[in-house]
Image 1 (cartoon, rainbow, N blue to C red):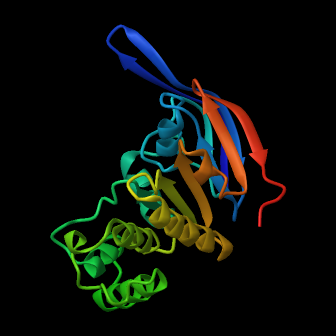
Image 2 (image 1 turned 45 degrees about the vertical axis):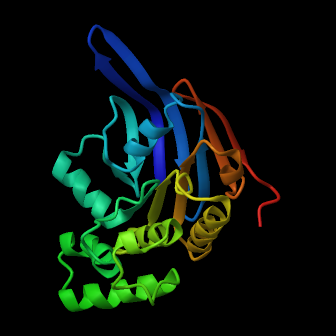
Length: 228
């Protein structure tokens, strides 16, 4: 599903060139539950942006669902994001002036789904994450865990093949974080490919594969044999 081969990403900062990714080789198959970990400056956020089509490679090859997309323009990348990738962010990124239902409906608006179908699907997704009684609440009226569950429902709005979660428990207490991780695990069990970007080893150990980055390189790629 995801194939990165000898991927590099350079940033020019004045007279300096920063090599954020340096020769990344990663293959992720459909239905995997993967954590990408590493310390600050390891390149994991840059890698997330590449995988999520928020940025483009400087060199190398990136293939998503058998489509080579390293040369796609901004509009083509936006279409890929909208159709194939659902994002879950640490700070939720919900629109405070909109209800939970309206926040979940938003990606479907860009996909030109009819209003009736948007509303029906959003109700279904909020029910899926246990928020059928909070559809009309705005984010400021919800707890952190509830807001993150709204963001998970929003990530599922266009039925993407991939869920890309950036530090999804970083703004939550430990109990609520476990609930959110269980939601992501269930999505994986239901067939979604789930990729978590995290610095937390406890979060990483909830997945069945841990890819570790350091200084822009993959230093280990381990599959858990005891994963259940």
